[in-house]
Length: 383
Image (tube, rainbow, N blue to C red; front, side):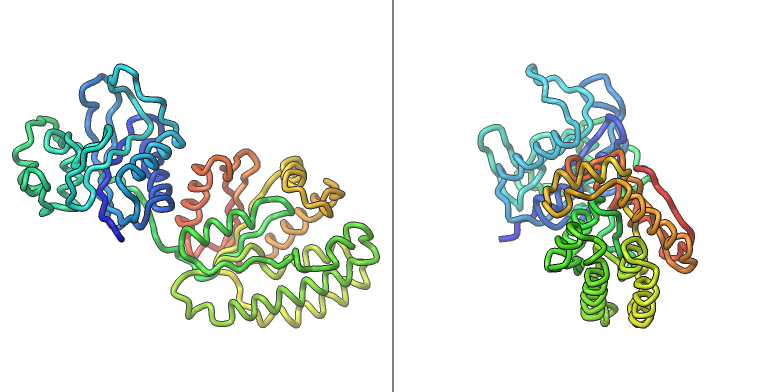
């Protein structure tokens, strides 16, 4: 069953807009589809001395029950930095405050949860955003619309509607995004979550199916050429099958690799004679493949890469040396610098952990969504 839920979201501490934006990602991934978002309203702190609040109202569809929603929103508040609520129940500055305002047209009282939220009729910072997205909605207890409740409100404060918006986009402005990076950079983890959040087709490299990979790490000179040839053949077939008609998809395509990585790795692993032959074969295949609208390179420094490789525990990768990773990185940089018509975005994520702290993941997503579809110069962002 799809339930209509209306939430009030506020922040008066830290990066207020970013706090609200991050909460929207969590809400949609944990609760359901967001259907309406109000403008941002600024208002003074109420019932305590503090910084001005930014507030919005959000409508979403969910299959969760009221107490489940309460539990999830409290977890989101805590994740995004809200301190424990005061024991004496006094108000204080907070990075995020999420209130459950309505649940369908229900009147609900259980434990410490009341629906509709009892503060709605007395708080303009709640009423103004509500009136924007649901002006004719009838309060199930008071039997009045938000238009009426605004006129009857005893609150003398008049929230200011800001020109700033919560830039929460639902569609990726690119048809095909290739997410690249060195070994252990986190490209597959990021691509998988990104595709899930935006309902995009996900194309993952099938490296675990390659029987030559463990053998290569044991004896690189002997197995380099068959490894690179098998990867090239598999990448070509996979991308040809998945991307040949990518323009017919309703959603974007996100891949955790781009076929040119074959040439980058081959340059490092093959002898000069082998590489020259390999390049002839590669060039023949490459001209037929769809090129990405956006090429993203996730940069991690060598120490972080080695740490990530050790952490994920693939036995055949444990012998990888920093020198080899440095060669791979230089290969990527040389490739990127020579691609005049490729839309490239490099994200330096060496000092963040977007898996442990999802707010960094959201920053990465927002940087990608704000990237110009016409950009043709090298852009480097340190997050």
